[in-house]
Length: 283
Image (cartoon, rainbow, N blue to C red; front, side):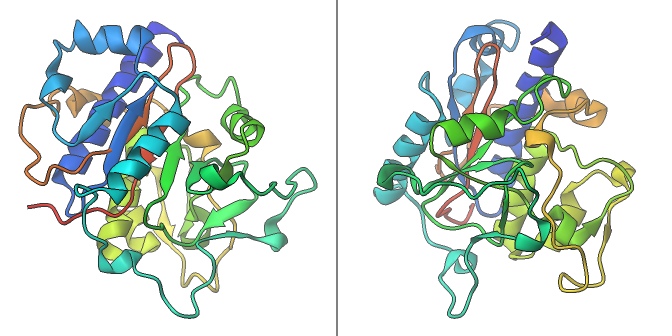
């Protein structure tokens, strides 16, 4: 990645922490593959302020290792409470479903993941699956590849190679967009946090997606397009308004709830892991 892209990534990761700290229902966040240039920037330019972050785990392992660590935490005494929106519902369709009407010739059905990987979902625009809702005790991986679209589809291929389930956010099912649907990593995290608060994807999208993208709510999910979001692997795009304030948001304010969460970075390839599961109410 270019130096400017590494700076952008650091800013987005910082905003993810800040948004989660202020959310009504905080999720478990892990920053995986925490090494290389990302680690150097946090420890030098950003003056180790991340050491004061509450509710965040930074580990050198990859996103699978982070997801497994998060799973153990969520099952433990500090796992948080299962909020109402995550409770199972009778007659509900699968949390992750394949929309056959939107299927393309290259969108092959994904193989069944190994038992120890079933609780991991990699968010990707290329996925043939769409999220209907978030599930408790599930790790959602946000691929924050800062490459300005040079490696389209890379995150999806990496997930498939490792036998990880994939899915896309249902933006096309709820919104009509006036511009491309590329979202910054922190926007994806914030959308998930808003869904935990409201249980409504439409409201979550409208509250988070920048107004300059011109998104408007469809008449209803049934009347609208049922395709998922074209997130371009949730790549980071230039977000002047986010980057302007992101380093200011890297404060030492404590997260009194104490819940923890996850993101992943790699020196040349970045996967920002957002584990949004079984959160307890923020206090």
